Amino acid sequence: MAREQGRKLIAQNRKARHDYSIDSTIEAGLVLTGTEVKSLRAGRATLTDGYATIESGEVWLRGVHIPEYALGTWTNHEPRRARKLLLKREEIRKLAAKTQAKGFTLVPISLYFKDGYAKVEIALATGRKQGDKRQAIAEREAKRETERATGRRSKGMDG
Image (cartoon, helix red, strand yellow):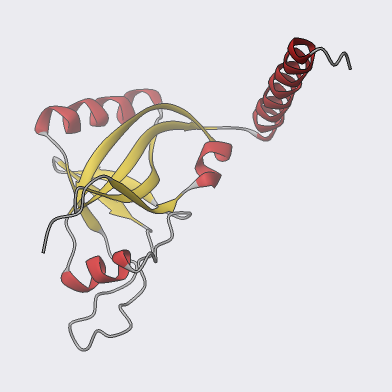
């Protein structure tokens, strides 16, 4: 059977973009068991409570829920187990320095298959306060409204 090509999205953490201001993102591979892969191929995963930690030079993804595979037997996995992320040593060193020094958090943004391999996009993020969230929403709405107005004007429909 031929290997998949391209990117197939499994799960997205939309709440993360609302609760955190994202500094940068990085793609990492996942160490998974067979039933986890089958469950992901069925499109079942939840990233909302997920976060990543760095322990003794390794990055671990915690709190991500991959439900048990329906047709799995005794080989089934634990739904919320810690999963190791595959990153280069230099990337781990940079992430560790930023999370310790500036108060950044590692948050999973999306989970997907890329050319047949399970990948997770993690973000270096800082938490937003309630006022910051409101301000970000107001800025987004203002930008959207100006784009609408310029679009109408270019079409000759003054509004």
